[in-house]
Image (cartoon, rainbow, N blue to C red; front, top):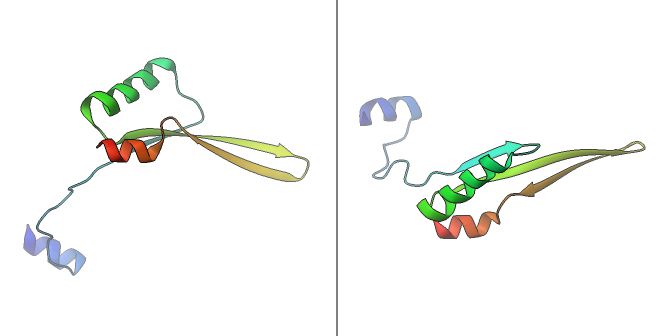
Length: 80
């Protein structure tokens, strides 16, 4: 595996691979059941999982894109 990795990426294989993972679910909205599942996985199983919501607004000629996290992403990262 190390040889294939080095040949493909032109780098040597790191000693630790895929040490940290995170899951970010992007959505315009989330149903309550899915929200409970995400909160449960984060709190009870220390998974680095969160949701980010995007909402588009238009006022006259101006366009706005708002984003909101389900949970404070820094708290989620610290917990994991």
